[in-house]
Amino acid sequence: KKEYELADFIMVPTEYARKTFLNKGFSEKKIIKNPYGVNLKEFYFDKKLQEKKTKFRIIYTGSISVRKGVMYLLDAFEELSLENSELVLIGDIDEDLNTKLSEFKKNKKIIFKKSIKQNELKNFYNVSDVFVLNSIEDGFGMVILQAMACGLPVITTRNTGGSEIIDNDKDGYVIPIRSKKILKEKITFLYNNPSKCLKMGMIAKDKVTSKYSWDAYGKRQIDMYMSLIKNSRIWVIL
View (tube, rainbow, N blue to C red):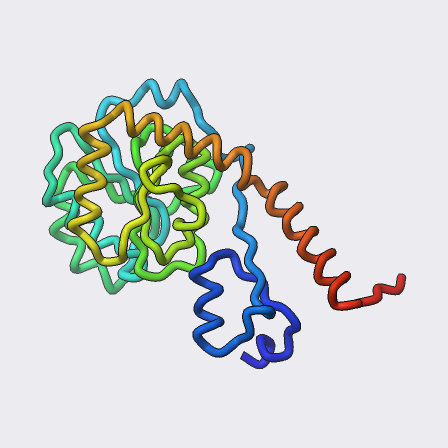
């Protein structure tokens, strides 16, 4: 907290994160926003893998915890009981949730996988149809960009930074937190409209490729630094 007070500027990746500072009384001029990027050499659309899909697959990656809203996703998927479908969750399970997940682990349509290497995630994204990040609180869901880069539409909440990346009904959906009803509606729509689902994924891929690479992030960051130096009359002596 002392460092925040001493800093001239604070960089944040999302509007959601920015508002948490404003709500604590920080000046708007002090908080600067720049969304993160994704490594496009690691995450990309693989047509050969996409063609191997045999069922409607929802994927989630990240810690399996209350904070990530995983329980709402599990409940929604189980209640929908969609034919020829699968829910894959990749990540380490919080100890507090182990007992609550015991019933879901009996469902053969729900696959729990431990954390895997970053460069292997693209293989799972590319055999899936939709990515869901149903977080209650998340500073910035970088997995959103990973999934989009691999050609997936994304369903996420307003508290992930997704609302600044995703255009509703074009490349995904941004829904309220804890809204299992709306989550079920969006999953059902994409399940019943495979061509629309695929089209949204391609729009997502094109958007991330053009706007959210790490190179694009770096350029925005450098431009911000230069603007701050100019406007603050900071002199750098070498």
